[in-house]
Image 1: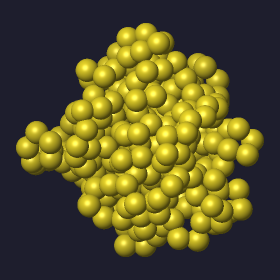
Image 2: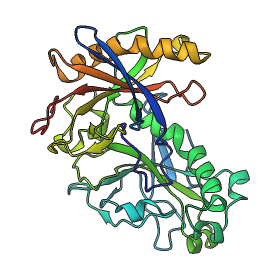
Image 3: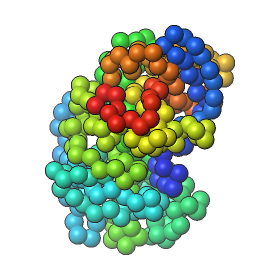
Image 4: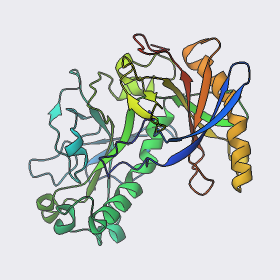
Length: 328
């Protein structure tokens, strides 16, 4: 469920930071370049409106549907029509709710209540303000991060497979899905709404048919072709493109989390960890999508140890147009 952040959105926490990329072929030939990063969920839900089931790693919070005035959050598992680039810029969600049995562009994976100290920095004026202005962007980002980050990781953890590696602590299939969140409108805030809605969605308008259970099964099933993430680097920027485009040069296969004892402490350590990950990328690609033969791999990560969160996205070279993506 990692993907590239749309540059039009200020509400995606997976920032489009530049990164160093290490590439190698199956025979070990190496090259280097620089690309922007393809991006890669315990929180408190609305009081009196939730039920929780499951153990430590399977806890599921179910929230009752939002009432007409939007004071209460929507139900976890609600599906939405695709968002336009303009809608992705907004603080509050604009997309229409749709039946999850129909093609949809996003799913609500969690909801939670904004902590009091962060709520004190929000108001109807802020929520209805310009999302690109720092006076709106910063308190909104803080609220969304506080509520949703752990929830996204929890949901994504359900689709992890055993990496069988001392290098990576967890691995999941890469997809077009990105992390997004939404806050109430100004009117809803004045009516008492204090929720954050945490979603996973496609940023390019692609529709898909997986529900939450389907997302959790990506460790043991193929990724639907519509959710495969392909990239071009013709302009040196790793821009996501349709896989059947003549510009497609890479297919993202997995997102891996570096084991805690492998995390770098300085820039030299970062470069060593990154280089060490190249053959791991090849091994994980084989496990995820099968033997792809003599191919080049690219390992995507933040460009410096200060920004590195321990997460890499690995991709394998493909020949455009990709009419049948690997692993579908």
